[in-house]
Length: 432
Image (cartoon, rainbow, N blue to C red; front, side, top):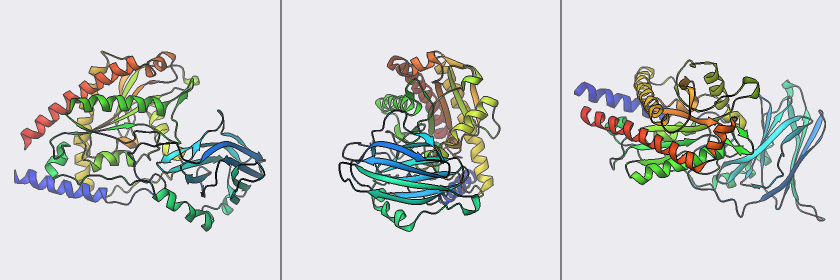
């Protein structure tokens, strides 16, 4: 018994050390540094009514029409070459199809990255510097405008830091967003089982993508919206039972960086982390259908799993974040032992989930797979990533937008969670 207690104390200290490590380097981009739970209201914010590019492969200008002036910060990033413009939260009311490239810009995208902050990301054709950036007041019947001017340069001259006057202006608006609050961690024994002080296990639901990152899209439907609707329905089903404390990594159209998603589960000592996605297969690769359940593995189970993991792991690049990994050299041995146990629990849940889902929803021909998904890498929280269907498949897409199908799928997932956590809580209680 003493040995078990000492192991738990050491493990708890190791995990606390790991949690205290510095966050990933976001290259000075302060937006979306932590998950935000509050709902986002789009009324009362500046409105962007039009956006356009002008120029050629040597010099390119971007113009954004607004109903009022805003502060901003512009930054350049390399590998791949991008320009990131942070602004206070903006209600983008731009015409469909806005974002096509011209000149030095391959394409651009825009959206919310956190309550209180929006972002525009430009994918560049090569290295370029920001030669000028400013906001014009409304005048002579013309709206207020944010203007960004780019000029082609070679890599050696590539500038990665913005002008000082543009960096400081945005900080008060971003800082005004409500901070995330996380309860104090319970003792080592309850942390191991994922039980909170009130006796209920914590379940974290992670709807993929969000905000500036739409995920896959087909027939006017975006993955970020489909998986959010599914995640909210699953939350409501679980909360109705009263058995669990359910936490969403996002409950609105907010972008959450990849590393912050599993941190929500770790900070809450969650008993289970379920990430919800909806895949799409490129037309050149044929057609695929059905739900797939992924667990973490250093080596992908097949080429499709590797393709999907590579695509999902680039979500931060889509939103303009640096993809630097966090340090992993703290208490390697203890964390490795914990990871092995966690993967065992993850695999058990994946098999339970497949058994429940196959009786209510269509499953992929190979429903259990594994790959190196970044959101599944918390060493001490059992986790799965569920691709609930393919938006690129007509039949799956019809299911994904159907409330009846969603209700059945959510019901089977909730049943799997009930079975898994009942067994895990019973085992944890017996070991104590």
